[in-house]
Length: 314
Image (cartoon, rainbow, N blue to C red; front, side, top):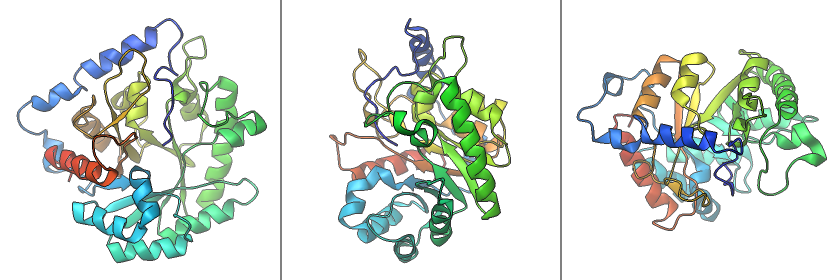
């Protein structure tokens, strides 16, 4: 969920990954494809059930100011599901009460995992009614005091990826015993080239138990790191029960990446949803990065919902 400074964390230093990213964004996955007439068949009868969700990090400031009103406004917009990113100073049980009052459910929660007290995170997930216990960042668990401070830092090395996979399997086993599904959420640093064409994200997929560890594709970060969610859905079916539906403004001259409302950035989500529906996708959550200079986060949430409705996913 955090915003990075560099747009090229995944680049190999010679521009090769950048050209691939530009190709992806300019190809059939680009927003130009939205001009095509008609909707694909999956959008007219999707097994996903058209239950649009939103990651609450998108409206973080509004949630801190008035979580009850913010949740009700999101429900009025049309969102039926939310994914948490903290509880705004409330307990998980208190937050669940606000969810129930607003008429939204919470199938997934981004949680803080303390390896010495995993039961606390699992208890929060159960209090929320969540099925998926998600880690949004595990670098401090894998690297300890060597973890990057502040901005999430350099790309994931293969050593870090191996340590992360081991930790993920351990959390996944404990989560299963607690009746939950552990899920790993990516940013863009997992796609750094280790020097021989190998990337940490692929190692994570290979070295984690498919039953213990699922993955939540943050499509925006993956796309802008030069990789294609559609390809991952095809190669690893049933590993990705959830996605973040995120977009960025087209990159310009290596400037910091800036979040965009869906349909106003560079990603066409129709082929991504089509591939996901075939690969076992269950939930999808809008998430928008800042800065919010064109409109407020809640206004952006309305634009994002309208995009989902336009492509048949709401």
